[in-house]
Image (cartoon, rainbow, N blue to C red; front, side, top):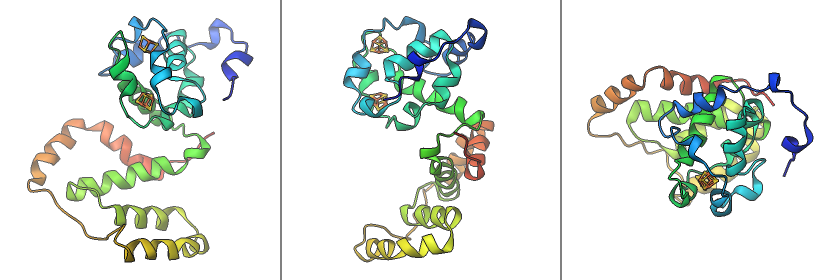
Length: 208
Ligand code: SF4
Ligand code: SF4
C-alpha cells in the first residue's frame, strides 16, 4: 500500500478545503462531516488491503482537503459497491455513495489511474448498449470494447478465448430489449449532463 499521504509535506495553500463540501453536496455525501474515524468501514471492506487509501482514510483526506490524492487514488476504482461499509457504519454514513461521488469528480477532471485505463471506455460502451436496448449484452460489450481498444494483433491473440466462451455459452451476442424504452429515455433525459459525461468516457484519454 502506498504511503503517499504520510510521505508528502503539503502546505495549507495546496489543499482544497472546499472539496469536502463539494462531495457533501452530492446525494449520499451529506453526512461526511459526521465521521468519527472509527475505522469500521476499512475493517469491513473486502478490498481495503488492495486500496491505496482505506475507506476511513479517504473520508479523512477528503475532509482535510487532499483532493488531488483522493481523486487520483485507486481506491475509488477498486470499490466494488458491496455496501458493507455503508451497512456497518455506526454513523450511517453512505460511504459507497461517497465513493461514487468522488469517482464522478475524477471523471469530470479526466483522471483515470493507468491500471484502470479500460474503465472509462467500458463505462461508455456499457452505457451506449443500455441506452439503446435498456439492457446490457455482455457479448457485445466485450466485442465493442476489444475492437475499440486493441490493435488487430492483440485482438486476434485473445480471439480464441472469446470463441471458447461463446461455444460454452458463457457469452452471447443475443440482445434483449426492455418492454418500455420510453420510460428509460425519460430517466436518462432527467439525468442529463451526468449521462453525457459517462458517454464521453468512451473516448477519454488516460492520465496517471
Ligand atoms: S465506519 Fe463510518 S464513522 Fe467509522 S470511519 Fe468509516 S465512515 Fe467514519
Ligand atoms: S462499498 Fe466499496 S468501500 Fe465500501 S466496503 Fe464495499 S468495496 Fe469497500
